[in-house]
Each structure stands twice: as C-alpha cells, then as structure tokens.
Image (cartoon, rainbow, N blue to C red):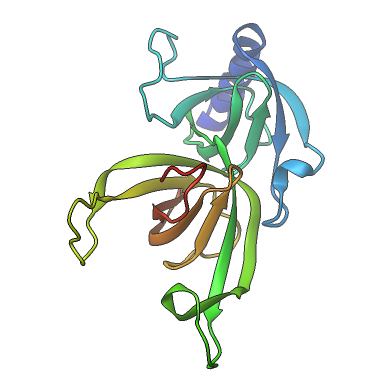
Length: 219
C-alpha cells in the first residue's frame, strides 16, 4: 500500500470519526472572489475541528488554527467549511498523511482598492485618494482578524495619545488575485482597516492591518 492509498483510508477514517464527534458542515469552493458562501455548496458532510486529536486541549485565546477532522476526499487548499454549530473554517494546508490544517474565519470581509485621486480643487480624502474611486476586489470573503499585541504611536507624539491598534488577518488566497499595502478591508461588523503588510504563503494570505474607523464610539 503506497502513501496515496493510505491517505484515502485515513480520510475515510476521519470521516467516520467526524460523524460521531462533529457537526454538519457545508463545503464551498470559490469560483470568483465574490461571496463564496452564497453559492451552492459542493456537498454537505460531517466535520469536527480541534486543537489536538485527543480532544483534551481547548483553543487558546486568539488561536485561529485548528485540526480539521473530516473526509477530505475531493477537497483542495482554500476550500471553505461552514457549520452552523462550530463556525466557518477554511482549509489552509493538506499535507499527505498529516493532519489537515484549518483556520477559523469568524469574519467576512470586503476588500477595496483606491486609485489616486484626480487633480481637482477642494478637499480630498486621506492620502490623496477619493472614496468614490474605490474598486471592490473581493466581497464576503472568510477571514480571521485577530488583535496584534504590537502598536504604533503617531509621529505627532501628542500628549496622552495611545498606540494605534494593529491586527493580523488570515484568509485564503484566490487564483492570481493579489493584495497590496494600502488596500482597504471592511468586515461584516462595519469595521474598516487599511492593509500595511502582505505575505502570500502556501497556506493563504497573512496580512497586517491598522483599524481606521470606530464602531459605537469605540476604537
């Protein structure tokens, strides 16, 4: 029995375990960068997500990575699993004969790109850009947005000012669509971020962002 044949058996075993330990999830695969969860699911299956195979450790605060336990036959990296009971996850890595790495994506984000504003009189938006020139790049895309312990002071160094909050964003990649510093992210709660750093890995996008807008009077 070679590794591929063994992996099929492992996947089938994981599927049987998920029926006992997990919940029903819908399997999605994006065909374009717009609202993948609003399309028809590829299948419905049992899936469970844990931090270890023994189910003895709870997820730590701020931990997005999970081991996915389900029958992965027909799955690809970047596929999405949405469960009404457990949450939404995307498949980050599927190494042969090793645990499937998934990321818990608690937010749905819209990505916009702003072109340089045309020369004109009057006031312009921050950074010489105009909100009217924003182009939507992605919509309702699953992502993990977690607070980064680091921050940055304004160069003005005003008395009593606090550090600006920074966030780490993890999300699946799509085809040859690239994300650039300066792109804007709005999540499904209405919070808005500007991307400051990007890294495309085999597991998807890893982004650094600063939150721009307040919600209910709180930054």
